Length: 109
Length: 115
Image 1 (cartoon, rainbow over the protein chains, first blue to last red):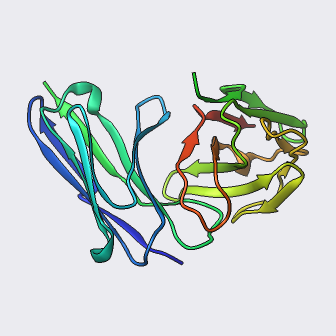
Image 2 (image 1 turned 60 degrees about the horizontal axis):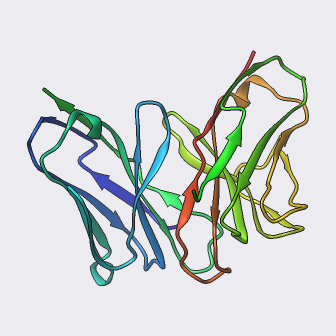
């Protein structure tokens, strides 16, 4: 099956710093999503981005499908950005999303 | 507001006592799915449904049942829960058919503990 690797696995930032999270995948995909799992366990949709670039406030994402990677940019980080960030992909006619192992982000004051 | 809802959000139960976790979506999505999340194992698919009356097994279906009698609802049934089903459960929905890329929306999660 498709492999999805995220880096870095852990990240500690001071409030106000910027960061880039990376997602590499091993096969072509027709769906790529970024999620934020908050400390209460909820999965929050950030981006649906099988290709191209999108921005939403302080967050933006870029997927280069031909090179099989996606990047999530967080600018001016806030403590509420803390949690785990997952990318998830769907390939071909698969019935499910395959999730990466996640990046655990902690933003400190 | 477009959303996926799950109930209950938290449940502590005992081994063998049948339970149902409900899932409902208001986006008229054809596709619905259940995942469980466990430390070190990530999110794994339990069952999915491509439309009403069409369900199929995911990666970890043992010990679970589902039904899809209406488009909006996709309940997860544990006939005889066991401690290894203690987990965080997510319901998801999306539009589009097999072979199409479609965004999936996740419910808030149900934290189940089986003692």
